Structure formats: C-alpha cells, structure tokens
Length: 313
Image (cartoon, rainbow, N blue to C red; front, side, top):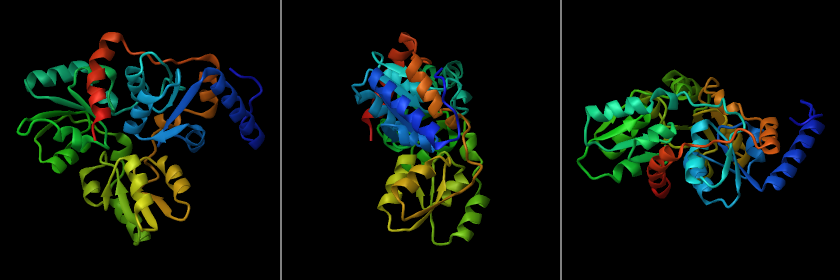
C-alpha cells in the first residue's frame, strides 16, 4: 500500500488524487462509479451512472483496465461484457444484499416449478443467476425488457419483488415474482414521504422502483437513478424529494446548483456502496489487486442475457 498518505487534510487529499492520476495513466485505466458512491469517488470517476449506463460504458471502453466503483455484481457484469479487460473492484467485500437473496440453485428450482416460462433477472444478481436467465434488465429498462417478450406468456422475474410488481403494473404482464428486496429502499416508508412533503410542499417526489409499492404510489415520478438525474434537469420544479440511496444527492446537487434536493429518508444509506474509497482506488491501481473474473462457462451463459439488456431500451 502507498506510504505517507494521511487522512483528513486538504493537502493529503490532493496528494492522493495526484497519485491516483499517475497510476491511472500508467495502467491506461478508466474509472467507473455508480451514482450511490461517495461524492469524492464520483468526482474522481471518468463516468458516473446507473447500472445500465455503466454496463454500456464497460462494454464500449477501449481501456485495458476498468476500476469499477460499485458493488460486486456490477464489476462481474463488466468482466462478463469485457473478458479481455482487467476489471478491478477496489473493495471486494462490497456486495449487494438484494443480489444475495437468490442463488442459481433456487432459480433452477423456481424454473422447475414453472416450466417453459422465460426468466428476466434484475441486474442486481450474481453472475450465476444471470447464467440461468433468458434476459437481464435494470430499473431503467425493466418495462422495455419485459415488454419485448411475446405477449401472453407468463414471465419469471427475480429477485426484486418491488421492481417486479411496478414493472407488471407498467406493462400489464403476468410476472411470477421472487420475494427479494433491497433493504436500503425498503426502509423508505410512506410516513417518510408524508413528512418531507409537509416540510417542502412545493417539491416533486422522485422515487426508485425498488421502493415499497405504497411509496411508489405516492411519487410524482418513478425513475432509475439516472432517470432521476434527467427528470430533475428537465423539470421546471425547483425542489425535489429524492426516494433512493442518499449518495445520488451529490450528483443531483452538483448538476443542478440552483435547485434543492431533500432525501426522503436519511436512513436510506447502503453501507456496501460506501466501501470504495479514494485510498482503495489507489491501492487497486497501484497493486492491480482485487481483479474480478467470472468462470468462463458461467460468463458465456450470462453474457447473452446481459447483452440483451445493454441493447434494450
């Protein structure tokens, strides 16, 4: 690990950023960061986006090294799309509780209970689950992906029941839902929305489709994280309540300095998304450590589902 890098002072942070820039150039690397990452990691990144945007960026970049600042399934997806590239995940302990709510064995059992049904899996899932699926989707394109399947067919949708129920309502399709959920989004309650609305009656409410169905019904807009960024930028409103992980507030405020953004709940914080730090980005680049590789047989099967997601919507 690099020596002499302290914490807390402006000088130390500038030194750290300079070292990252030098190693980034040395490794010919690109840094991708999810909208929920720490603000200083977002500011460092070459590209900040939601799962779909980051997947597309990983697929198109010519850089031989990708430093993926997100949670593990995101780095896995980048590795599957670009097996010839080195994908580094600064903190390998940054997992996703939602993705952990289903495994390949459980999905195979569900498929056996409902034979012949196509499987759509949310990108918030492991490579092994993607390999058992027909199509992959994100919160940005779930309705488009589900709508692309032949009308009249029942569809298995895993693992997020809230995104699945919202997608079913949007498309009118019959979905067989796995009972997974995101603990961070599930902590946002209707009471939270009511409280923030009372405090800011002029604000529009934007929420993520991973939220509780009751919360989604109270929203003025239901969007992926990048959809929220577009909605806020294009809207004439000056105030917004934001119902998703609080990390996105950094980007929203940075891109819209003359608008106000209020978290629906300060409790909507994903500790895994905050594990990637500037120091860990530096150590990953300097030591080329924590490379994410997916077993070739799994990657080959998962790639078809992911490529369909990247091409859709």
